[in-house]
Image 1 (cartoon, rainbow, N blue to C red):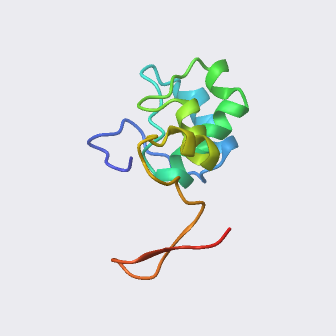
Image 2 (cartoon, rainbow, N blue to C red; image 1 turned 45 degrees about the vertical axis):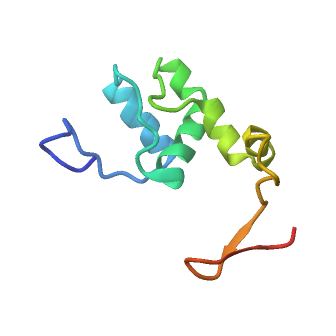
Length: 109
């Protein structure tokens, strides 16, 4: 967040595991961490790195709005396909190629 009226502090650091770990160690957020801001590259991937490195557990930080299990399921096509309603006549595609706004085309595996 880069709004001084909303944020207590603003950090201009690279989005890396080490930089974020240092900030979290210093700030010790009591409410938790909202990883869905910043999309997959920003928030979700960094949340996974923090989780795998044990930082979230060590600092007793909770993910807000999404669980690690949900992040992993959403990124795993096989698991995501298993969540798709059985009433659907076909499974989720492995890849889509958008050739226009109106006509997505399924690419072969």
